[in-house]
Length: 262
Image (cartoon, rainbow, N blue to C red; front, side, top):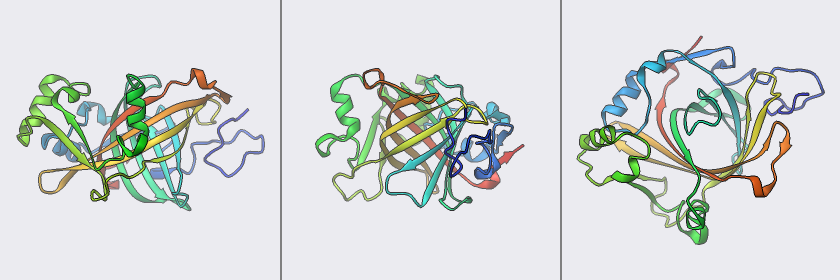
């Protein structure tokens, strides 16, 4: 039985491909290649995105997701994951499209992320933006030691040296004048095969975008997410068994012309 019919409006018991009619016409049968110049330029300018450029020549889609954000019903977010499920580091392409026409794409992000469980109650409250503090404040700072979590010491040191950032990097959210802004929340539904017979539902408890400039024209995006898997293969996971995860997503904006779908 198909359990993840989230790409179509309804499911009437037929085996219908769930990876059809998606942005950039990507599905599980495709391989995706990237023009490396914009990603290489960003890394050269100090971006903290972690990717082996040689691997961008041929990437296969391992899972596909659709994200519904509360208050953004007129938009659709899709993610095309290139890593197998369960890996700490994830590589994916994210698109933001018009809700009525997924080919009307507002934004394409090439993303590399790291997931980790919060270290305790204080961490959890931070990612929830408890009492209008933590995630949702005007900026998010990574010290040099923090960045060693995501990249090797040599890579961190090299990228910080580009802009003479000895202490680390700071990403700012939009409307920086506001002392605190609640993060977005919603639901991500992931499928692991074209028919949607295997997948997960994830509750996004917080999703906060930030950015920082790289030189005069480039920008690096940072999305800090806090989420938990609530169901797997159609079966709900007991609350006591749900493991919350913090995710740090470093991203570079791309154009359609930077991507080739085969």
